[in-house]
Amino acid sequence: MENYANGIVAFPTDLTDHFPNELKAERKLSVSYPSGVYAIGMAGMIFSHQVDSLEFNKVERKLKLNNFQGYKPTDSIFIIVGDTLDYSDKKNGIPIPNFDSYERDFGLNSKYLPDYDKVYVVESKQGKYLEDKNLSSGKNLPEKWKNGFSRGIATNEKENELIYWLCVW
Image 1 (tube, rainbow, N blue to C red):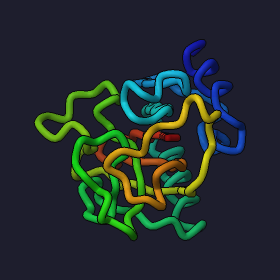
Image 2: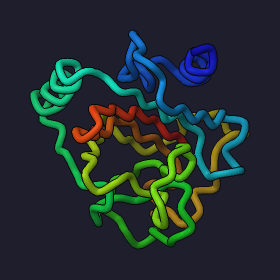
Image 3: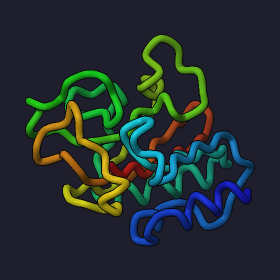
């Protein structure tokens, strides 16, 4: 769990406060530190763990109570940060991370989570949230999303899995 703690402190607290404080068994963890933005087009952290159905339902209920909308992973509203596709004309999209950095095999379209997951975007904002030397070029992104962050939680009810993410570019 040391890698988890190191990932959390690599980013401002207000960007990671949606990640769990109490960890169940780690399922997968992917951390891209701010100094490595140029490698994949974003810095960020993706963490998943399996929880019991009580915990799963509690998190999902909290997301719904806070009026966060659940999207299918392949919803056309998404702008995938770090993707090679050109999203520059997608003015009203919502950025989420390219999940291929998350170390699970989703098959051919590994940038997406499985279709039975729900993606809840907790917050996304435009602007500079990294030091200038670590900012991405914003290649393939709409001008308003040249730099920014996105954070959220994806839920997999089939496996009681919660996937927390933060991406900053």
